[in-house]
Image (cartoon, rainbow, N blue to C red; front, top):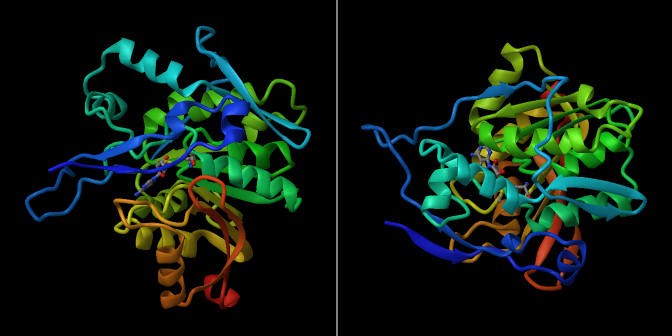
Length: 304
Ligand SMILES: C[S@@+](CC[C@H](N)C(=O)[O-])C[C@H]1O[C@@H](n2cnc3c(N)ncnc32)[C@H](O)[C@@H]1O
């Protein structure tokens, strides 16, 4: 059985900045594939490699979003979707979502090809409070287009790992966006990036097995706590990957109507587990109510 829910609202700023209307979708959660034991088939982790000669398809519109004096370029999501559709690869996760007229098919495609409004809230917040990314190891979980991670790169992060559920999203959207923001950057931001696909439950062991940074000073994540089922998995990966003294910033809606997730539910989970302190650092009341949450490890020494 599938059901529909209204997931998001577009702000006046989005229109001004040219963020896609797809930021305001109705989301359909399609049936979840399970094996005989009832477990979901979760996407295993894999790394997407960037080749120096990688080129961006010139037929895709490039848009930009200005945050303070920083300009973040990104591929127009609907153009990217159109290009994927035109290739007609029926097995692709994104094609499956498009065919289901859905922005999100749970455990198949988790919505990474759009730019969701809380990712813009997050970069504006990072700018506003002047977070110091210099020499920091940064992880963006559920990155989609990757704008917060790219913002960190442009602001001096030592390295940034960009993670998305879908390899296709990283290949079609995240990597091109990093490349788009690289050429005029003396620090070669592309050389400081890793791109990891797969379910959060597989991330920690993948990073360890592949000698990739296993603890991060700053973890960013936007619009990733809509699913009640996924919140504990996200909590556990945050706990496993945050450095002692590190900070997590979560940008999300207060309530995701129809699915039950949201900031209050996540805050309750975090408090119940006791591994982190958590507080609301910013609230947005225009359109759908949204927040920025900040988390720190409660017992720093536990995570060494
Ligand atoms: C609604 S999209 C948000 C994308 C982007 N952060 C933004 O705000 O524009 C949700 C993101 O969470 C990620 N995600 C959701 N559940 C996940 C899971 N169980 N494991 C890994 N990633 C997941 C997907 O990769 C997807 O990009």
